[in-house]
Image (spheres, rainbow, N blue to C red):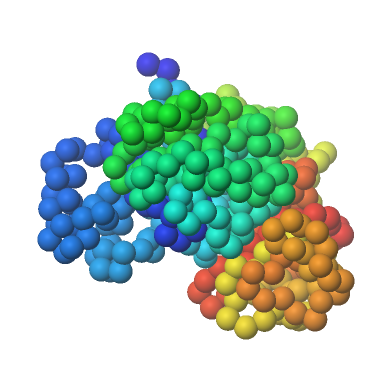
Length: 420
């Protein structure tokens, strides 16, 4: 059978609105778990007096998580629908969700926003939606969960749906394109079968996922390939390895590695130990490159064509969202920025504007500091040369996570660049 198109799906929303249970339910209803495993989980959950967590437990393999009833680990799960092959990026709460969403392969093509029927939209729901928008999650479906807890009440669902539409419009989503679906992830209504939600004339959750547009491979953008490793192979020469983010890689191409500022020519390309005629976005490849030595380039460099090389920033302007900082961020703060395969310490040089995280409107010019929950436009100076691209032009290389003290403190997207 032909390979189904692949999509990365992120599940976002407030901490108790049923993300794990919904993911568990999607996996269960698409046949990813043997029935006996599910029975075993149910028994175990009931013996601990947490019957309703059985499905979420499928997701939360960690013992500590079971005791606490929350999701800590980021679980990568896969399932198939009629049309797509999905990888779920299960987003715990704030911190890991962002790190995951921004780094590498987890750039989500689409998202499920969870909203609890009994509780409606919460502050965290708003932040997650703003973040999803900032980070380029183009397609969303909204699941209004826990319908069983409100007696499958249609009027209550419609009220939450109106709230959701208002929120999505405020950050710039086209609500005509976003399905809002009532579900009970715990019981299973509205996910694969309608169950007690037969008054809902729209799609079930699984059917709505198949309505997503297939993500376009950014082959029309200039070639950008962040380097993961560089090998020296006897009899072949220098073999850099990395994943094509944008554009197309072909033998014969004259390439530039930045910020190392080295040039070479691609001789051949290999994927899974087989030579291939070209590599397109998403392909993890090794390639033989003439003219560069193993010590000329390194992890964190980005390769592009000589006539359109990767952009090296002296400084850049970015829109950031502070997710989790124990105190405040002021000018001079120098944490580590993680973008594609690079990790570079960068300094917050100017805090230019504070934005309303729900709407993106300017709240304050030249704020003194930023704290958790703030969104802002800032000027950043990398402590050593770093490749970054404008998010509007090459989004795959325009996003970054900011880490400090072992956690993701902020996330952002590059708006403008002062070139080296």
